[in-house]
Length: 145
Image (cartoon, rainbow, N blue to C red):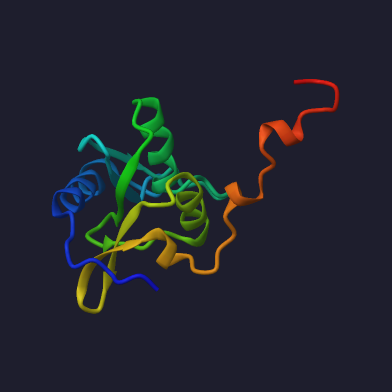
């Protein structure tokens, strides 16, 4: 396992906490996420809870970032509403974060406080989707280029 980082992006935690406190209302939106793009810009989003399994805040954030032209996210954090604080991403979100941003760091809460850890530490021995894709040349039908 890679060593955890002692530095924490507190500005990012504050941004997610603010969105959780001001935008998460009722049962439909209970989690907020914030990410820092490589440019330094902070993007925020909330989950869309639904009994059929709506998307988590982290997944909504990935789409929101793309819609805003931010495709390189470096750090992400999720915060629960009602002062629940930092919440680690679920397994599905860990897998999606790994596939989209294999170098992203995630802020998690530990017994010692907040830590930033590489997503690979949150999902050890994981399936890496990109490693199992045929490249375009191999997958093209024979006789075409």
